[in-house]
Length: 140
Image 1 (tube, rainbow, N blue to C red):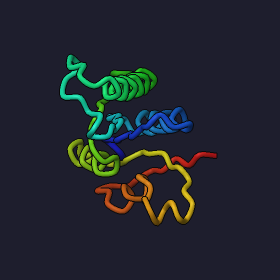
Image 2: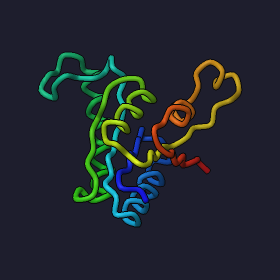
Image 3: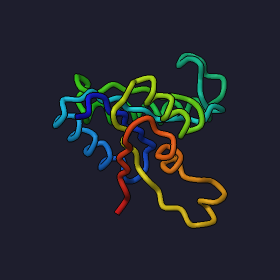
Image 4: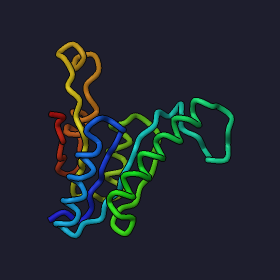
């Protein structure tokens, strides 16, 4: 059913569960997995060799570590990963289209009413615009 799955991670508490869920789905379906972690465009570095802005270097390093850890847990033969820059929802949707995925797997954080009005969650924005089904792992 699913041949290409996009797994979006951000280092939240439920990341381990999200990674495990995506891994199980990939194994069950014989699917490829693309892991992405999005960093704000202001913290994106054009090259790993450029050390001009220490906070950006730190952000990039942490994002890459999250991706590397997820790929290692999922087996590199099945999963590949990337750190991408931009608005999280837009970047996830862009990667889903680029990867031609059949499913997006993301986490969810609970927002209050006012928070949702002021800044809709990444998950909500992805669900509204996704080119494929979205599996949202909810924190217990």
